[in-house]
Amino acid sequence: MLYFYKQLLQDRTFLVILWMINLAGTIYGYMWYETQLSTTPAKFLIFVPDSPTASLFFTIFLTFYIFRKHVPYIEALAIVTLFKYGTWAVVMNLLTLIADGDLSWQGYMLIASHGAMAIQGLLYVPFYRFKRRHLVVAAIWTLHNDVIDYVFDMMPQYRSLNIYMNEIGYFTFWLSICSLGIAYYFVIKKNASITYFN
Image (cartoon, rainbow, N blue to C red; front, side):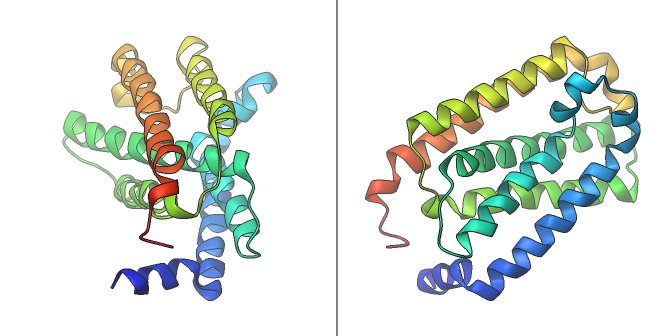
């Protein structure tokens, strides 16, 4: 069974299908942010669409991996941001459901798609090839993004949760630390001893 999963995750046809799904999701994600981006100061534009940028990093990783190439900085950014923003969006939509007592079909779609984001980033852990310096850059990007979001008020908008922004900012910071810790433990510390995919 483990051999089957190894082969599936490395299969070129599967990789191309996954690439197309992530590219489509990335484009849709940027479109989803269109309203917020239209009122965002230009200097903050790159930091606002968090989830589509995360899936863009993974799409770039897949583009190279299909041809058995590695892009360590992108790989580090991909695993950290996919897990972080995938988990974040699932939690925010569940909190919206609790706060409002209801959730639109788009909300359930976001839970499913962002849950899949977090999972797919972790599935490819054995195939990432990045080191501490690459993760340091991902850490700077990720934590700087938190500052932009919660110090300069550029965070994604969930209207019913606006009164909890301080708590959400605190949660997001520690989610960033958790995501970086996962990347360090499973890629940098453990990859050398993984036999699962060797």
